[in-house]
Length: 463
Ligand code: GLY
Ligand code: MN
Ligand code: MN
Image 1 (cartoon, protein in one colour):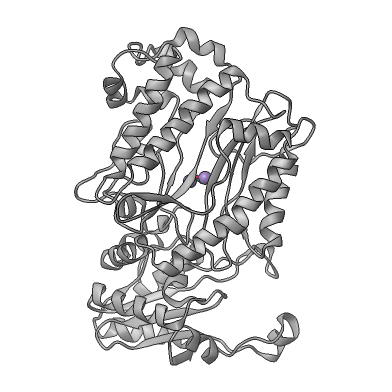
Image 2 (cartoon, protein in one colour; image 1 turned 180 degrees about the vertical axis):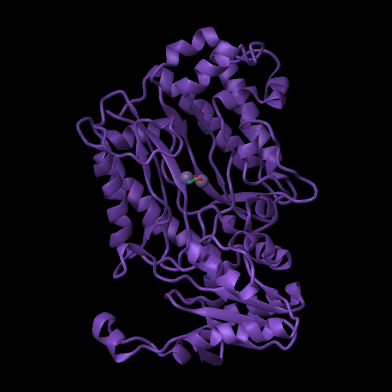
């Protein structure tokens, strides 16, 4: 945990931002995997972690904006708990670590919430993403289950997004160290397993093993696939064959639950062929140009468009696109090859704060979400501020079903040279992803560099 003062200050600021009523943060509970005593690995709610820092199940926190009172709800370990899961801190000790002096048994929470409501005071809560929590909130608010999400507090959502978007020095250090000491090491170890005859699951296992060895785990399910064109492919059963590309999207989650999110694409057998080299260079150039353009005040939508234009320009040189590049990107023709957004916020969640609603994170009065295929998937569009942490992850993919559909419809015929695409059949996909913090004058890639230049990769894969 960070020092108690960090959590005290965060809650103080939150009370000021929300202003009125009572804020309720429900920590996560254990979730049964196949029977009640066999749970999924416990993951605390990220906003609960942000304001209370306590990473264990069965807690709730209440903050009174007007009176200023703060209560931690939970249970002291019983003798049975101690027998089965060992000695634990008392609730009071836990609370002190978060800078809270008032603790109450969890059974008192319902009554306290109903008392607040009876006094016609608002109970602010964030939109739930687990069914059990949705039911609990429906019970408090006397709402139908389906109505809970829309009764979530917009004031609280905005305040949380405001605070959690700008990372403080403690958070940046945590993310930076995790990147260098864990994710970077995991990639170094994984590269040694990439060779013809290995299986995707062996490379994925190596990545996961390094995280575990460093007392961390992964921030999200690893993507490790020779079919990089399938964007969220979690199948690991393929054997690696010489000449294929292996796309790995993986990032460790720190002990304090901060995420990293890295993608690299490697040639199996250690050498890119000519075609792979050409496409890889276009993606890398787009990523580097985007990183260079990041600075406070710049809308991320502009950086996304810059990456899309860099990709379209590169593809035009290779004979896959044609016509005026600005027009092509304005119409969305590049999305045949680059169908997703350039990146997203990163923090306690890999898609940071996405549980409160994507549009609150990446969009505002100035930037509304596009409805155009491709650009519509952009999670982050608004103007950047110092200490935002973002991913920069352009990619080029050859997705047969999409190519066939657009070709048959003659879509964007003026911008896409369909005749040449057939030469890329079975190519797969290339994505390169790094994590960047916005600095006073520009940006900085988090952590020590993870190899991505062609010559460097070929050198390392050969070793
Ligand atoms: N790893 C998830 C993403 O890149 O968005
Ligand atoms: Mn990723
Ligand atoms: Mn990402």
